[in-house]
Length: 204
Image 1 (cartoon, rainbow, N blue to C red):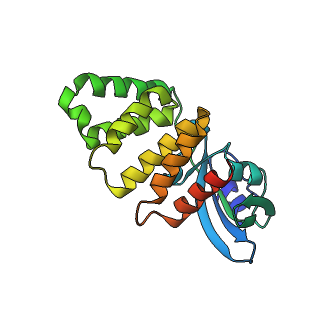
Image 2: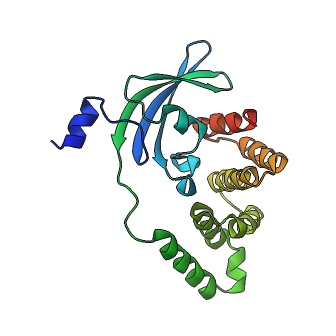
Image 3: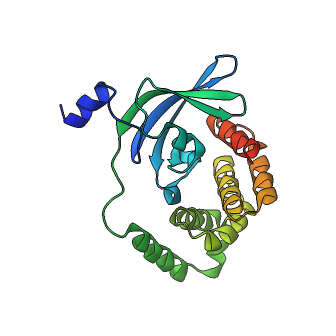
């Protein structure tokens, strides 16, 4: 057994970048909801896929804490968070991954026929990649274009959440709220995603 495994079993791994964390969100009545995510750099965050930004309020609240710790955390009816499990995950691969993804995107766009840029299976992945790289200026119009096409409910929710994040970071709070509200109106949205969206609206 490795040292990392032993540390995890002993509950000694602190919450940090590139850790997988499981928590219980405790509300005012004492009810709990289990939530699991990986802590990643802000540019890699995608809450819909279980990737929480290290700069997010929840991440900042639990950073450095270990299994068994309870931390005060206010978000809607949530009053505290209990850390259930922390385990290390593989860090981002070495090398200039942002440059590699940029090159891939440029090749994809250069090879694409103009009409394919209206196809969700082309536009949406490009938009997601650009957003993950932090290139919001190019991601935003592609996300808008993708939303005008026939996306699946999961893809539509992800696109709206990303647009909300872009607007919020750009100081366009009203637009961000509108995107979050549209995402919340999609039937069957994951409960944890719904709670996070509601928290974002309430924290504004």
